[in-house]
Image (cartoon, rainbow, N blue to C red):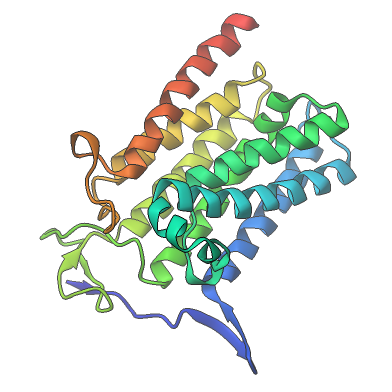
Length: 259
């Protein structure tokens, strides 16, 4: 039976300033997106973006992830708590981010960028989609280091005890998500985007593949304690993935039919 190493959540402390591992993972995510984006711009001539435009998109995307991720967590997971204590919405150091909220935030942020710069929104989203999985991988490593978002109890050999939680052997679902949402999703979307495809196809694939992988891995992940199981025994994460998968499927066929 494996035991969680019990990492110190603080990566580095300089006097009164503490740098947390989760913050480091965010930095890793944005650096990876920057490097991969620059690579795509050089190797794929159909990506018509200026360097300054890409830098601006990354800035918009960072704001979308942070603001959308936080508000998504508030609205999807703990709305009543934050209605009673609205100032806690700004207590981001206490944790609480939602991928689905972050995705919506990025969609809106890029839409604002496209409106201001007269760019095609769906074309830019096709460019951005392959840059996202590495950020997801970094985030899941942060969850594992912090011993949060642990899995359901299991008697399988892969089970791991999280001493900060209890003495049960649980699925290390953070590592499952690191592999599926990070590595596998990256390979699929990066491969699909390596050749020019109809506008909207890459975005559609991202929505479908992420939705499927996240929906499946949720069966190994402990549902949020304050929500539990919801409609038909599904978790909030699974419910939020359903419209993603449906939208992606519709977009996929629309993109090829439109071409």
